Image 1 (tube, protein in one colour):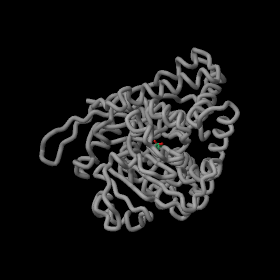
Image 2 (cartoon, helix red, strand yellow):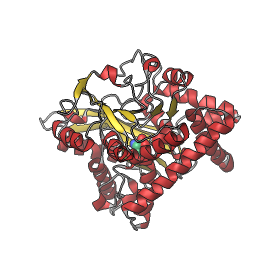
Image 3 (cartoon, rainbow, N blue to C red):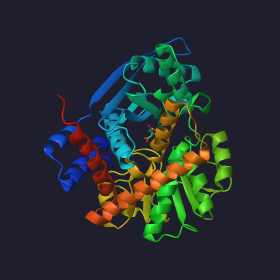
Length: 421
Ligand code: GLU
């Protein structure tokens, strides 16, 4: 069951539908195409019985939603988290459609998830749950159909199990069925840091346009998982001081800038940033409103909302997480002149390198990490420029501009294909 957050009473689906409707109006989208885009193409709900280590049976609920496949196969991550719901999965699948379109890679959008708490499960239980989920969706996934990837609570190990389960069913190895898999079975070099690296390219471009000198700029980061930790590591060489970081357990602060390499070693060991020696503790409620130049939410949805948006002091907000800002939070930040680089652009580095991985897997020809990173930089800077130019041309904020670019591209594909039959 979803717990209603009083600071985000609508939830992310209402928000993405509102953004879609608004961008459709701006580009003068015809109603037929808008109606098509408001509905996910296919929605799958599966029960996943798992024999737990204590001998008991747990039946988990899993989802896979394919929002759109007009520009290419469905693409998107799989989330293992207690807050997974059908509604959220639909919202996140729509965001994947826009994300792939905004960086102009040939995919539609999808998302999957299982309601579970991976922190409370053994490796054995996670493996059985993953293999059964994959088996239930064996005809849904496929390199030309629907290609899963990591999201919150999943990573290369889970992708390896999905690839193996799918391949065992087919009778031969199918590396192109998932991305974000281990290097030994066709993973792409640079994939694990790709979302964080993509964010850094976007921050660099945004800072240039907004006249923010990165050398000496301060950053506050919410989330120190795969995305947040890579981003922090890669932004420090540009002279940015990461002064505060929070995770579920709490937040830490150091006005001189946190030592990210030492913090990463500490949090890998301790399971949290809390207690890091060279820092002061900070309340999670005070993290986002801390004085800084750049604020990066890299955790859950709905974090910047009508309860705290008025107190945010950053000049630039870069959405490394999916849907971290509610529509009301967005309105308040825009009114206050705070520039927001939206999720579908800011965190698209992950799916961009997923695309590179898929191409490499299909061709069985692998690139160096340098090639991956250079091509990522090229895609991210071009996408940023497209969105920035659109914002200037139509006098829009960056989120609306990213949406009009993305929806425009998907709509063009729909028009060119026509409605079947
Ligand atoms: N889960 C990531 C996202 O939300 C990556 C998706 C992918 O690589 O397909 O963008």
